[in-house]
Amino acid sequence: MAGGDDITPVPDRPDESRPKVGVDSWVASYDDRRERGTGFFGRLRYEVVRTPRPAFYLAFAVAAALLPLVTSNGYVIRVGFDTLLYMLLALGLSIVVGLAGLLDLGYIAFYGFGAYVYAVLASPKFGIHLDTLFILPVVILATAILGFLVALPSRRLVGDYLAIVTLFFLQFFVTVVQNGNRISFLGLTRGYDITGGPNGIPGVDNWDLAGLHIRSLTDYYYTALIVFLIVLTAVYLVDASRTGRAWKSLREDSLAAELMGMPVNRLKLIAFSFGAAIAGIAGALFAGLNTAVFAADFDVPTLILIYAMLILGGSGSLGGVIIGAIVVNVSLELLRTPDHATYVFYAGLIVGLAVKLRPWAWFVGVLGGTIAFGLAIHAIAEEWWPRGVAGEPTVGGHLGKFLDAWMLHPTNPQTLGNIAFILLVFVILGLTLLHGWVQKLALIPTLWLTGFVWDNRLVVEPSITRLILLGVILIVLMNARPQGLLGAARVEIV
Image 1: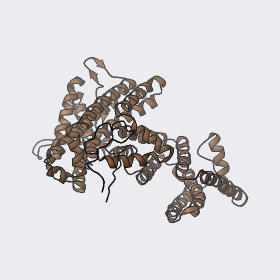
Image 2: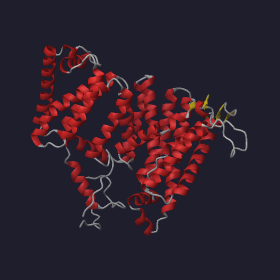
Image 3: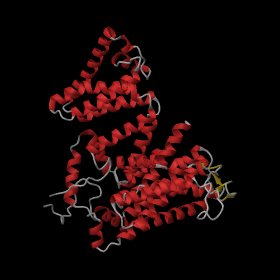
Image 4: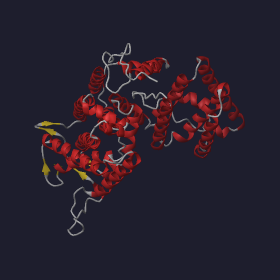
C-alpha cells in the first residue's frame, strides 16, 4: 500500500518544496522516476514539465510575439492567428473536460453563439455598430449565461448521458442558425431574419477598441495573442484556487467530492459558464477578422479538432493546450500540399523508427533494409513491368528523385493504391501478432507498402489524408502516452 500520508518532497522537482493538495508524493515520485528513463524524447518532455509554468508561458509569449517580426508572409501569420484561436478554444474546453471532467460535445455552439452575438451588434444586419469594448462584455456575459442554461438541466448527468445532451444542443444550435432567416414565435407571427440563414451575416465590423482600429492581419494576430495570455493568466489563477482544486476532485470522483461536502452541481454550472465565456471571446475574434459568420464554421469538424488538440497536449494541462494546438494546426497546414505532406510523412516514419527501434543497430538495419527492398522491387519492375514505373512522383527535388528510383509509380495509381491500402490494413494487423526479430524484419516490406500507399493514393487527396494522419497520430499517442504530451500520469496501486 502506498504511503498516502507521506509528504516528503520529491528531489529535483521545482514545485515540490511544499506538499501539493490532492497529490500523493509516492505516486509523484514513481512518475518522476519513470519519466527520467524514457530516452531522449522522454527526457526532453521531462525537462519541459520541470520548467515552472509561468516561465514556460513567458517563453511562449516571447516566441509568439516575434513571429510577425521574422516573416511578413500573410499565410504564415494567418496560420498563427488560427492557432491562437484554437488555443483559446482548447483552453475553455480544458476547464470543462480537463479540470471538471465533464464530457461536453456541444462546446463549439458557444463559439458560434459568441460570433453571432458580435455579428448582430457590429454589422449592417440591424444597423448596429457598437464599440468592441461594449460588445465584448455582452458576448462574455451572454455566452456564460447560455452555458449556465445548458448545464442547468444536465447538471445531474455524467459520462455518455451528458455527452448526448450536449451534442443535441450543438445540433440544435446549428439548425437554428441555418434556418434563422425565418424565425417566428410558435408559428403565430411572421418570420424574422435573425441569423441570415445559410447566407450568414456578412459585412461584420472589425474590432474597434475605443478608437484603436484593428484592421490588418498582424493587428489581429497580436490582439489574439494578448487576449489568449490574459485568459491563460485568469485560468492559471483559477486552477491554483480552491475552485480549481474542487474541479479536479469532481473530475476524479464526483461521488467522493459530494460526500466531502463539495457543491458538485454548482461546480458543474461554474465550469460550463466559464468555458462558454472563453469560447464566446474566441467567436468574437473570429467574426471580427473574417467580417462574416456562417453556420458551417461551427459544426462537428471544428469540435473534433479542438478535442484532438486537448487530447494530444494532455487534458487538464494548460501548457498542453499550447503544445496541442501548435502540433495539430501546424501539422494540418503542412499537409495541405503534396510536397509538404510527403516530407512530413517520410520524416514522421523515420522519427517513429528512431524512437521505437532499439538497439540502434535494428534502426539502421530496418531503414537500410527498407531502402534496399524498394530499390530491388523497382529494378525488377523496370525489367518485367514497365508500366509500374511509368508514373511520376508527387514531390520534386532530391526527395522526388529518390522516390522515383525507390518507389513504384504505376500509370493507374488510384486503382492499385486502393488495393494496396486494403492490403496494408491486413498487413499491419498481422504485424501486431509477431514478436521479436521476426516482427522487425516484417517491418521492412510493411514500410515499403506504406510508402506505396502514400505516394499512389493518399497524397493525391490531402483533404482526406490530413484527417487520417491526425487520427493515426492520436492512436499512436494514446497507446504510447494515454495522458497526452504534458498530461499528468495516473498511477493506481492495487
